Image 1: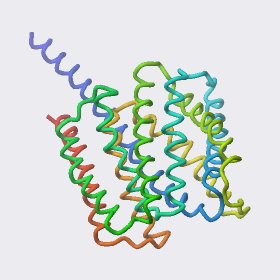
Image 2: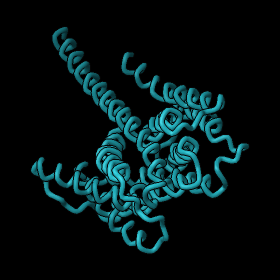
Image 3: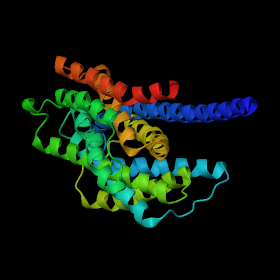
Length: 311
């Protein structure tokens, strides 16, 4: 009996260790997403003087598609079609809708405040995950959402104008669109056996198919053929889109859509700091307070999980 108990204890310990490694892996991936996308918003804002918003998105997806397709070939994989209905839903709302609305919002608003509005996405995920995924918000999600929402409000500062009504509406709609795309991504991974890299390559391809015709239909500024434009497209295509969306879809496939959305709130906090350092967009005291409250919300969301693992 004693030997059996010890054996069972060891087996349980192995199970907890595996879960702990999985959780740590998801958090590490989310940290990389925050760093990658926090910088991407600053680059997107800087690119508004070199290339039109639709042209930029078409170019970044073309670069990302080639990059990820080569990675897929080097790994010995093949480009296999993914379930078309859910894949199209992800492409419309997350791959293209979110990017188009975000880029247009940056034409009229500052990077720090526009990203804050776009990252109301976790709020929409909380509202949509219950009816669409059957995921009821847990107590720690609600507790973490309170300071996070307050922090977002301080960053947005609607009483100060936020760069105009149009930019604010576009950025908020981009958050709604991204939330729908994240939920469709979660359904894609839960209902089908989809290879992560293959799915991401397909999303870049669908992004090109959807956006490229729009680049000929929507009037935009002429492309400025400078090294800043080319380097910006390469960063957004390879790092932000190729690597970033691959990491994001990996996170969504491993944790709940709600937790992934809440963790991504680190991006607007980092963007505010980077916009301050690089774009000379000086944050106000309220914006700094908002950044701190968002980080507090992240701590509240993630702390109970670590406590349960130690217990």
